[in-house]
Image (cartoon, rainbow, N blue to C red):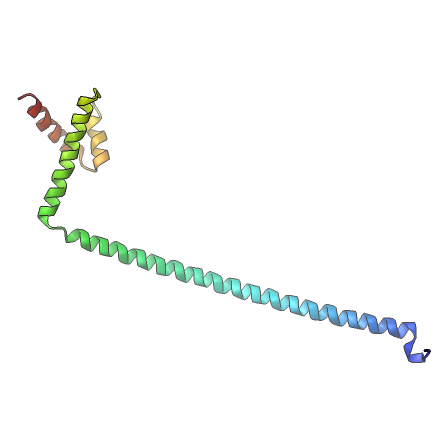
Length: 136
């Protein structure tokens, strides 16, 4: 079929026009998708920040509850806890003596104090009482 409107130049022009239209449509779609991705990333970051804030608030509430529970410990319970800690320190001295380890050394009291979370002076007093009990 031969017609002046359907020569190769016209056909080539139609094809180029269609390609340009398709490319521009694809580029517009790609740009729209990039914008959506950026929006989603921003929403995700905002959600993570909000979650971190909520977790921090929850940790703070838990810490406050823990402090309230600790305040509620009665003096008798505190005394029992103190006695238990003293007993553990004395048991450590007994273990060291039994195993032939050094219990008279220079930094034994400070090591034990650091381990049990008490003052070195407190451990020294317990050690003196323990040694006095051994000499009876």
